[in-house]
Each structure stands twice: as structure tokens, then as C-alpha cells.
Length: 373
Image (cartoon, rainbow, N blue to C red):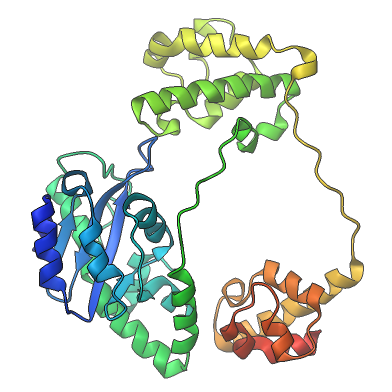
């Protein structure tokens, strides 16, 4: 596939001028979060119906010129599963999208259950997309030719896919439903994750540890975070969770015991063994009255009547989902069903006012939900 690799500010401005005035472009991004501690936007792919571009933000720098395309309401911008892309475009470049078409959302409204780009492209365009670079480190430079070809393919087929999905939505009378979700998705912004010293408690398997084990896990977790930050490496590439949990449950006393821990290689034991054992000792030294514990969960009195109401609503939703050939969870989530159950709406206007309920959901299953209430 032919593409242009854009690695200068002048090159980006030239691309924007070439694409200006087109009614539709397709966009995707690649980030380095899987391999790196510091997640960052590492590539932006842009396609028209005829041309394909790979924009290198590391060398281009400021991506402000893209606002002339992405934030122009006259330009329809096609993404597949735009949620993460919109977050990092907002975080790393301060960019938003004014006229979104999300092919994943469109496919969900058509009843598709396998919503990956490869599955949708294969079904609607009869093409198989490559998969070998799905876990590539997009922050590495130079990018291999295979990685560039893979990246270009991610947007090359989106315009044609959009055409097929849009036609199918219009045939089913669901285009307005999808557009409502597109407009909501356009509002997606980056939200800084909550970072606290209690992150280790969220690790799967932590609840099986004693308070002393949690103290060791806390020290090991903080050690690993520090190494990952220093090396700009994903934490699992420093040492996996299973190793941390094993050492927390059965603390190694020396290098020999350390080598018996799953995931600790001889090289790791030689390079980092002293630091790992020091973290274990810090956990063992925590005073008994300062040992970490899981906070007690809130107790709620059961509302049997509400539970029965939600089950009736769930049954009504599932029946409508079957009639519409749509996934029930997509049609309306359990969380929103619970809000409906609490509100007990009597009219469609009441239902539309319930927190989390979309206008298209009122149209699609409102009568069924009111009957269940």
C-alpha cells in the first residue's frame, strides 16, 4: 500500500492543505502504553478515499494544523472505536473532533457482536487485515516497513467501511440512533487517572494475602513502579504481578529463594535481587498496627421490590434486543436499568429524564420498559 510518512511540521501543513475541503477523512492513532511506562501518542494515521499518511508526532511536534480538519463540522471524521483515540488526541495535542462517524458504534447498532476492526472489515468488505503488529512498540524508531504498512491499513479501509455501515443503518432506520451516540462520543475528553499509594490493593489476587503480605506487596509494587518509570518500561516488563504476589505470600530470604519465584530469571536476580529483597524486608518490618488492610465495604439493605422490578426490566430489554437483533448490554446496560427501576417512570418523557437514558433508547424500547414497570 502506498503512503506518505510525514515527519516535519512543513510536511504536516502540506497534508492539511491537500485534504482541506474534502467531505470525509479517516483517522487512527497508535500509542506506546503497552510497552512503556509513559503512555504517549506515537503515530497518527490519516486517510482520504485516495491517499494515506502517517504522521510522526515525535518529529512533527505540535499537531495544531490538524484542528483545521478534525474540528471542522463540514468534514466527517471516521474512526473505529474512537474512545481511546479521542482521549489521547485531547491529552497530547489538545485536539477534538466535530463530526464523528465511529464504525464500531455503527456496527453495534447493526447487531454485530464481534466489534474488532478486523471482524467488521472482513464481514462488510471481504478483506482480512494483518494482525502481526497489534502489540508493537510504536514508540520505537525507526518504525519498520511492516509496522508502517500495518498502520496505514488501519485507516485505508475506513471510508469504504463507513459507506457500507451507513447504508445498512439507513436501511434499518437506525441512522439517527447511531448519530446520537456519535455526538455523545465527540464529547470524550482525557481524564487524569486517580493515582494513590493504595494502587497495589487493586491487583487481582491481593485479597488472598494476609495484612503482612499486603505490606510486602505494597513495597514491591512501589519498587516496580520506580524501576518502570526510570526505564520508561511497562510495569509487567519489569516483573509480572504473579511474581509480586508469590513473594508477598511466601517472602524469599535470599537470592536462591528469589530464583525460584515465577518470572524471576537469573539475570533479574543478579541485577535487581538486592533491591527486591530489600523491598521484601521493608514489608516485613512494618509495625503490626500499621499493616495495610482492605477498607470495609458499605453494607446496603436489600430492596427486594427494586430487584424484582429490575429483573422485569431486564427481561423486557432482552426481548426487545432479540426482536431488534442487538446485543442486550448495548441496547441498555444493567446500570441504566437500575436507574430506571429506581425512578419508576410513568411516561416516555419521564423515562427520557432518567439519568443515562438516551433518546434513541426511549424510541427503541421505551414502551416495553414502561409496560414492565
